[in-house]
Length: 306
Image (cartoon, rainbow, N blue to C red; front, top):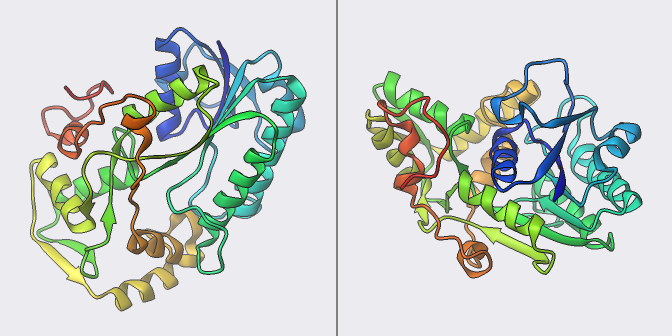
């Protein structure tokens, strides 16, 4: 198949591009800063320079393609790059370009917790509205809602590993009892590839690993995997909220924003996990998914743990 990918230079996108190529597909990737060195996974991939705001770039990206995998998303707003502009309008433009080019298949990255409700964060509300755009497109579509994705290139996980190596204690927000269901990035990449290939797979699918853990347990697991488990220091949640509010004006440079904190506290689990039920994937455990952090494995390749 010929598959167009947006967000291919990102953490998850690089794994998906590599998986697609391993399965024999021709990949064309939308790259905003085409003049910069490309990640190793995109070397040799056909490049369409531009971004979601450039109609000509989107036309070049999707012309002659059989399917589109749309991954572009942001976790903080920056200038014109608002959640509404990127998640909703960007998806609308991508859908329109795919439809005009006659693409048969659209695979879309959303997020666990996406919902257009007053109490939801702006991130979740715009993710839900983007889903609505995809469902109303008339295209054969699969929408994915993964929990926290773990693997080489995940900046927050690697930051926590570095903190375990360098600090005597690790701060944890509140009681740290909010549930998450981390999923190995290679399992997610395989699900995206299978969805692009199989048009009969249509609908919205949650993706998670086999282990539901608390955030505290997740932080401890990262410390063990990094080889330097540290004691945890629980910071009262009201103080963390005050700090996050103070960090909000820093935008992409903030260590954590109010919305990010609220999404973390809300939890991220997938009761209707589609990895095995729909895609026949036996998901890697959290322990296996974190093995890339081990000192003797740091910097190694991306293969799924045994």
